[in-house]
Length: 390
Length: 138
Image 1 (cartoon, rainbow over the protein chains, first blue to last red):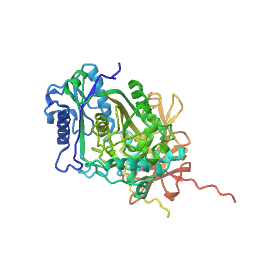
Image 2 (cartoon, each protein chain N blue to C red):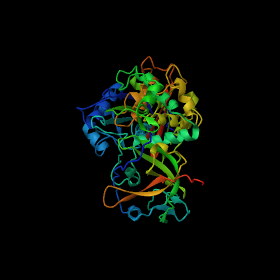
Image 3 (cartoon, rainbow over the protein chains, first blue to last red):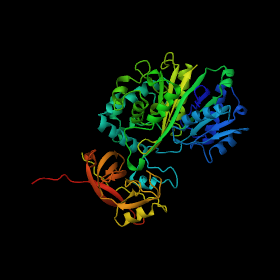
Image 4 (tube, rainbow over the protein chains, first blue to last red):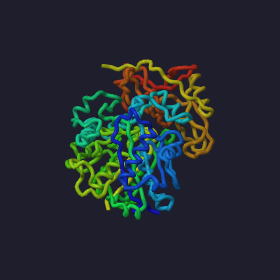
């Protein structure tokens, strides 16, 4: 069974906050749920499927469903693949809708790492008690940044990728962020600015890293009949893929990600190819994340990512593949340190023609949203959505 | 300017019933890795099943303690340190630290050898690696 055409995204909402000192995590989930339902023209009692991941407090769905006061749910899914979870949720929602298990699915994300003072990228952190790989990695100072940095180092070694090329990814994001009034880093930067920013973990500079922000987002996925009744622009889920990559007993290759598999699945289901995509939301925890995923998704050959991203090729109106036109995680926000939700939301804006006019892609009828969660250099999940404006 | 590795405080690993034998051996200065007895292949990190077959027909074997830097990054914190994937001569790549050297001089492909470093508490030691000096001909 294919999910192509079986479900539509009819609501999308990004929380405007970037520092939520006075809001709990549950409150952020509630506010984004309300915002997405309003955007869709639906009410809370229409929701019969609920999706959340590890950013939700406690027992996830149980605590959030209670806080939101949702009644009559028939379907619940708390799949957690880190920052890519929300793309998985949209795919799973489409599957559940196609199987008749729910009609209106709500997916929420919310978190406040900035208010909580998290040194998310630079402090070794465990994902919880009993994680079997932690004792073999945490004592060595494994952090998000230095694990992605090792991917970058190896990519440079094998393919000659340069820091200048990586910097272009940040430059492109900053060109988009200047038009976003909510962006944390709205200033346009140059390649030199990136290279002159402090080194965090060789070869990644501070400006190669995403921001730490509070906030959240939500989307509403519904069955076709409901979508057509709402009068909102129709954003169809056309294809989806999800995959996990890990250390393989120690035989890990750092030069590629699970995007290779999730992307192939999504393109096959959607029956389109990378060159058909008009706009792409690409997970951008670090500049290297973007480069590796672009290769693995097939936007360029493996090893050619550096050349592909250089010279403004990702800038809307300038290059061949406009990406992250909200400024992405690199400049706009990275709520709950999980960037997948905002990737979906900006793709929906582009397909609806609701992106900022300065970055809106002309005739944007086919978009890709993609996420990679966990740590690309150890174990991670990738998820890809192909979305179409009908 | 060279960056020398300092004596970073190394947190003690969380020991569980399955990894205890590995960390006990490390305490005694022995570096063990997993071996799948069905396929003969070594693996890391060690665990109670083979990541190749899921069979529990596995053992811990002593590694030679030599390898090559597969990738690395110097964390530019107040006390800089070098994290690396070291490809052991037995095959598996493991996360570790490169120590006792100029961190700015570490390169992919460097040959390295085992050195144990003490962790914070209870006599724990962890396997780390240091560059093997290039053989000089006289």
